[in-house]
Length: 358
Image (tube, rainbow, N blue to C red; front, top):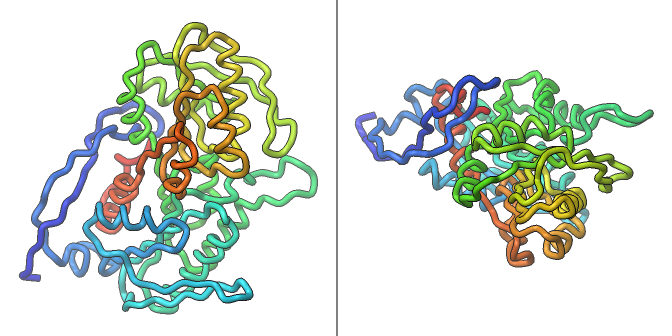
């Protein structure tokens, strides 16, 4: 305990208040602190030393988070046998440690989900003190209700699988519906990408901006961002006619002659996104931009965005998007690694994470 080291921590300044739940800070301030080397070991944390591992779903994000925390990436081996089965082996001791597994269940969803469950089982059998699953993107989150006869509630099933595998805590970001956290009987830290989005939008420096929600379900999210930016809000009346296919009915709000920014939680096939952009242009909008939190970008998404009237489309790196940027010059990536890293630090130190919620 006599040894000391310098670790870079970044903290959030509380800027907003009065919203329900509390609003987050919008800026990170970097500072150097001298702390006991045992802080992440036998210091304040009752769960042992901090260990961060990542599956194969998003190694770039794992590395970025570890860089933020000044922690090494945990060593493990993972590969698939010729028959498709997944094999995992931990390459370092984790007995009595506080383990965080970073594994978004993005495409290929089933493979990444199964790998997460196998990883959790490996850590549990290796006697980790606590296991936190970090899912920046929660796959199957859109199948959260029984809206048709004889259909499953798969989001609940996935929650059960994660819990039964041995996870003690879940850290996730921008669930498709906030009430999904109620499917879990373990603590869930539900972060929001709002600080990252607000910073990016402010840097665009667009006067007379209008924030647009592409459907009724995203109104609360769009309204919160519009309120913090002190700009107007518009809503698109959308009807889903088939899987991954929607029909735009009306645009509610004044967009004629103004620059607009579409805000959505998921960009999947981008069908809704490009139709919304076209409708806004028809209504007289000038520039049309878009910000999405989870860039799934499956199927024809990249081509649709490239061929659309969108000027720019931003997505965060909750899922792997870096390889997609070179195929679409309208696409930009925003990093959520500092936000997730700060949450991991606070959870490990048994500190409050309230400032990170929106």
